[in-house]
Amino acid sequence: MPWLPIGGRRCSVCAVHIVIMGCGRVGSSLARGLEKRGHTVAVIDILTDAFRRLGPDFTGRTVKGVGFDREVLLESGIEQAGAFAAVSSGDNSNILSARVVRETFNVSNVVARIYDPGRAEVYERLGIPTVATVRWTADQVMRRLLPAGSEPHWRDPSGSVRLMEVHVDRAWVGRSIGRMEELTGARIPFLFRLGSGMVPKTSTIFQDGDLAFAAVEDARLAEVETILGNPPKGE
Image (cartoon, rainbow, N blue to C red; front, side, top):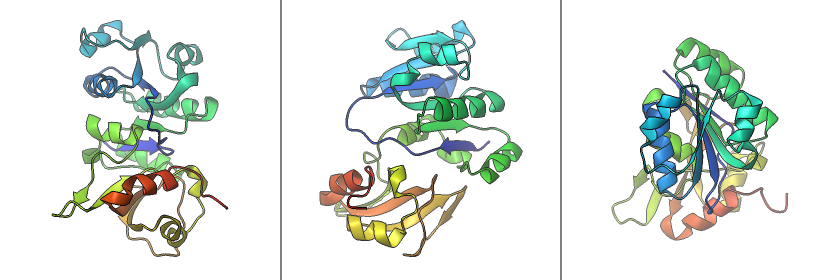
């Protein structure tokens, strides 16, 4: 039951509008968590009763329909959205919705859940990276939608250095890992590409869909995230 992240995450220190298709256990948990963090949320589902899972305190928008319907997406505020998550129970609906949102509405920060490993392999061959199911609880989806930085994957005992996934602007695609390390002053010891981890060389070229993990001193965390979260300067 792999999940598919499509495109990169948009990095922003401000609240963003996020659209979620699917109001099951994952979708409703994700919606409530995002709203608690100060983001505006719209939830799409074909069943009106599903919205009950959001609870009485949810103040976001609910839209009945499917996430690949243009009118439904417009009603959800997709034109103002900074991210989109397709977490319904249907593989076809999820991948179709994700592609429509990315290709029609130019939302690059998109996540889709895929249950069938066979289908996931097909999408992987089409250049859509897969991520193991164990990483895709609602919390992990949220980490793909929101800027990296709050939850390191590893921190040294002194608390001065951390290893964490960092958002990388798509303009870095085609640059070497060595060049990225040179411009940030950080180390990138690990990449997650097409469903597999790899230890890159300095000559390794950063590809669209790669997830980058950087070893960063706490004091330079914001600086490194800012550099990688924006197009490279002077190039």
